[in-house]
Image 1 (cartoon, rainbow, N blue to C red):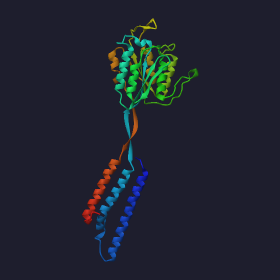
Image 2: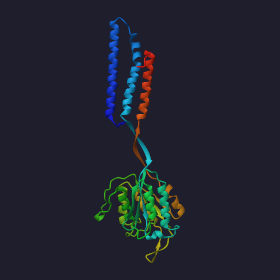
Image 3: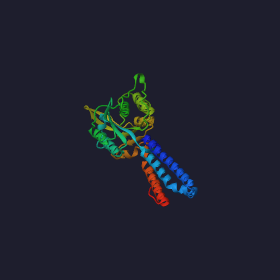
Image 4: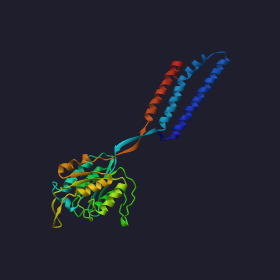
Length: 328
């Protein structure tokens, strides 16, 4: 239990202790005076009964002193909280229409549904990524900001999954996160309540793919996230059959690269969610589960102590009236 103002508690207890000392001294003097006069106070039991109301009153004052000091207990509470970064692929391949009306339009709709489903204690940010990554909105409890950023997104450029992860980690930590020379990975601390939701078709133009389906830069970025405790849930937007899109006057074939997205999710302890049509994307908000974090919240106890103090004071008043016939 913690106290907001221990000084008030100390003052209140000193007052209660002073009253208790005064009650004992007065009772002894009264007993001595009666004995000197050859009278009896009715025995020890009657004396204690006469003082019963006084002790209840003093106890009530002591409890009231605790209430005034602002007592509070720390209660662990499990809840979905933390930070979520929606990493949105806005590369040219996202204009493909194998997911109606287009991959990007369907992903934006799913992202907006996801944001609307989050409680107020979840900070939501948006990172739109092409090659190089582009931060669109820092994480904030104002979900309207994230929704507005999603609505503004337009497709252009190529895709770098590694840069998307690094840009998302930068948004989470509020500092630039980058792979060092020679592939050295930065230590960004531990962020277990942060999650990245990456919506992409998995088409990666950053470099040659490894055996996992991702390039070395993406593997390194995923490793940084994994060591920081950040899960990456990936959402595959597109179909394996693919389609052709026109980018800068060129006809390019594009298809969903599920292997790359699965590799990223598995490397960070996240989950891959396939979404080959609009209906599957609509269910993304309910299929991605944020981790529960245990936080300690203060539980004010002043009300309970005030109630106990009132009971004790009332009991003291009743005993005083019934035993002595006087209110004070």
